[in-house]
Image (cartoon, rainbow over all chains, first blue to last red; front, side, top):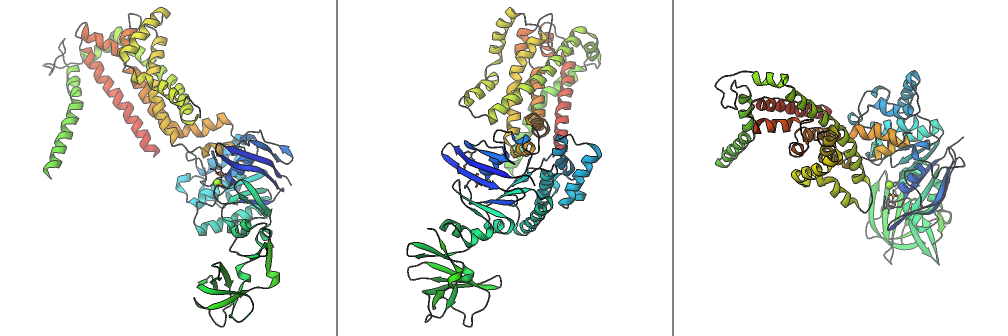
Amino acid sequence: MTGAVDVRAVTKRYPGSLALDEVSLHVAAGEFMTLLGSSGSGKSTLLNVVAGFTEPTSGSVLVDDADITGVPPHRRELGMVFQHYALFPHMNVFENVAFPLRRRKVRGAELRRRVGDALEVVELGALGERRPAQLSGGQQQRVALARAIVFQPRVLLMDEPLGALDKRLREQLQLEIKRLHRELGITFVFVTHDQEEALTMSDRVALLREGRIVQVGTPQELYETPASRYVAEFLGESNLLDEDGGLLLVRPQHLRIGPPDGPGLRAVVREVIYVGGGLRIEVERPGGQRLVARTTVRPEELPRPGDEVVAHWSEHDSVNVPA
Amino acid sequence: MRPGRIALWVLAALTAVYLVLPVFIVIPTSFSASSFLEFPPKEWSGRWYENFFTDPVWLDSALASLRVAVLVTLLSLVLGTAAALGMVRGRYRLRALVSGLVMAPVLVPYVIVGLAVYATFLELGLTQTTLGFVLVHTALAVPYVVITVSSSLVSFDRRLEQAAMSLGAGPVSTFARVTLPLIAPGLAGGAVFAFVTSFDEVVTGVFLSGPDLTTLPVQMWSGVRVQIDPTVAAVSTMLLLVTLAVFATAGLLRRRKS
Ligand SMILES: Nc1ncnc2c1ncn2[C@@H]1O[C@H](COP(=O)(O)OP(=O)(O)O)[C@@H](O)[C@H]1O
Ligand SMILES: [Mg+2]
């Protein structure tokens, strides 16, 4: 399998800001890697350095062990999908998808067959004659996907491709992108600021913060053994407890709320809400720290705001987080 | 209707009449049978149209104007588009200075341009030549192309160029297949302005014209100055039709696009 991406000590300095600070990242061939981070953390800059639109101040980018740092984007053979689709408005769907093939001198029956196949893959076979403006946002993004894979790139780069879509459509396209990844077997580098999206879609996630990668790992690793308080708080809800010099992480689904006479941390109930078929209970400790518990089983006695309770957990459900 | 609205309508109507009044004088005059400019004509005829199409002086100057205007349009489209690209996309310190220089020809009075050009072109042997006219008119037309193309470029989404590049299109292919088609309305607008600027230009034309080469507007001007030749009215009427046709076509094209 081909399409391994190696980012080596890449720094990108803009006047007045350091967008990337010595970032190194290895993406294995065929892997689904997500760059996750809040707005301004450097995700797009990193993706654009790989794509060739942004020249790094220092460092290098390798694809399959070949240094492509100085290679212009049109010779990199990497597919790219943009947040706002970037379809050519003066061409119909067929011509948009045919564009990369025509640049590679594919003609005639083979051109039609490959465009047709790519449109089939994204389930848009019948819309070749339409203009992009006549399609919905979800359909436009499918065309953009077809256009980016039709020339069989080694790597597909995607910069917040679902960011402009509503929730339902986003979830549907998440599944389709996953399916596409399985079917094509090529490397995907996917950018998002949505941690749920990152956790559900990726083989591995690289979490960026202020131009640095703070942790790389499988979704499970990042969620269960975060390398820092920042990672723990970025991914899902978390209860972080100071414990003689260290930090203890207890996820809300592992925190139990019990009657005040039992063992555990004393707290007062502040909020009880039904969410997704379960309960979300927020309690406040004497110092003012808030803890969150989620449970799907209904306790015999429903706590009410103002009740004195204790919060407790089993030893094996808590994780030490490096401070 | 309220009195205010009535006053507004009257004012608008008067302004419109004022703007097109010359047309109502020129068109009837061009069909006069009289040997002088006469309005309203006492007798009608098409003799001045016939005169235009048979008199080599008129035909030569019309062809010269057409030739110059076409060349000016092409040249100023190339230069103006390149300048607009540099002005909109470039990042350099002297950008303000560059845009000032590019726009200067529309700000400097044409008489001054004509005088300066006359003095130098006389020495270079460029007066009364197609090249001389094309050079001067292009300088006057480029700013209009820069304005229309710049406004197209400002609203152009550069991610489309990035997309094209990621799909394997080099810089030339990206420009030809993505950028150019999408800024074409700006180019078309610029072309119309450039053509009309050259075709209609009389001030510097007076300095550069002579027996070897006289443009149509200059010929018209001498047509009324030296002898009162009603062919001028016929030419004006035809020019009016041509101009209307050009703008109507541009308008139709734009409507079909959107
Ligand atoms: N062209 C640019 N010029 C100056 N600063 C930039 C430019 N592009 C990005 N930056 C800065 O680099 C940082 C990272 O930006 P970006 O990679 O776009 O973040 P993200 O995609 O994670 O939201 C931000 O602080 C941003 O302001
Ligand atoms: Mg971004």
